[in-house]
Image 1 (spheres, rainbow, N blue to C red):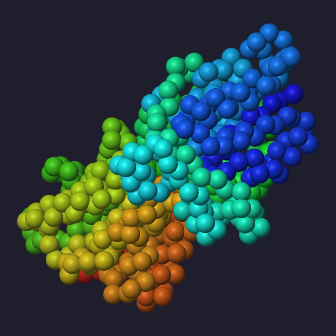
Image 2 (cartoon, rainbow, N blue to C red):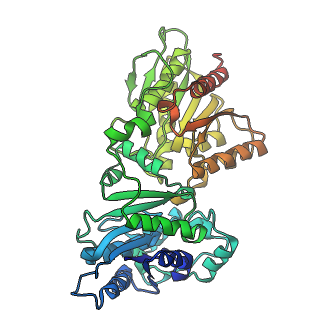
Image 3 (cartoon, rainbow, N blue to C red):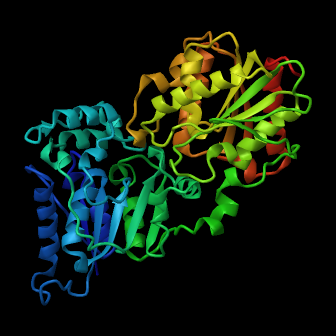
Length: 505
């Protein structure tokens, strides 16, 4: 018999888990949903989870034996912290830890990271008050704490009615772990509408993210649910099924990069179009691909801006990725100077830094005597989408065009970032923006597709000059994965439209 010990997240308790617990029980499992209640600090919540674990072993044999039952700990957002602390103290009783729409936590981690609102997080950290409470959200405020996609109105009413304040001491004091759980089996249940997918995890792995590398183990599995941050309310039975499968050691396992790169790492595979091997010229943070005969009249430039976040120690760095180099060489083969660059988008909170880096790189490009400083196009990829907002808002006359390939056009719900400077849709809705060419893929993650839909609708409302090129059967970062005619034609046509704005075609 599998024993589930569920640790709820911020503001929630057993009521939110009512349907999922009932489904688990109907399938023969036993379930305890810990009522964390008020507490002075994280250790007090850990103690309550430990007590729940200990009640399972009462009367079943010697202390520390689980009576033949497998104990599966489930932590939802903040709940991952007390769950991890309890697993560390009772590691010999735990079969698996399940992280629901959250990630594993390390020794010294502070649960304030579970607060999705970056601005609120910074204010709480600065204040340092460990005595007060964080009040629960109102009925219309839950979306600030995680995507409410799929949650029925009745369930949202119930969530609000049963919400409890979160003691600040539980958020501001660090988690202390001994390492007893190192190597303990674990499962990540990702919620796609929050912006977390298995595809995203694989892409981060291909970028060399050390946190993801540590999860390449046979006892670490993943599941993905097509819902928001509250699956115990939006799809309780599906969540129960996933938890049962996790307990049975099922799920998707990550493969080392060398084994999975051929199907997941589009950026690192050969570019879908045959382009000339135009040599690279490195100038500081930028690489230039100059057409043959580039010493003549100054030429327009197409600046390729990568997405992210990308680990700071990624190797190769984005400006050397075959996909981005392919776009730069394609531009150069058609008469423009192609440029790739590296910028500092190493975390979802680093958009201001990345924006400064891009602006500095563009200034360096325009200063090159071979570049026509009055004919510049910027082309953004994936997580670089929010970086278009500053250029849309204050477009200089020399910026003839912007383009974006499968972009994320607003911070995703799981990021906890709401900086208004990086919301392109808000600018497009006002109109008066430069021409914009958008490559939209049909096999996009739903949370990302929602940001693109919002951007397109805003452009229509503002009568902004947006041209959309759809690639219905293509996935994110398709250039190394899909070499079919439709994908090849889409890239070629998008480049043509950009170069038209640069007076080249």
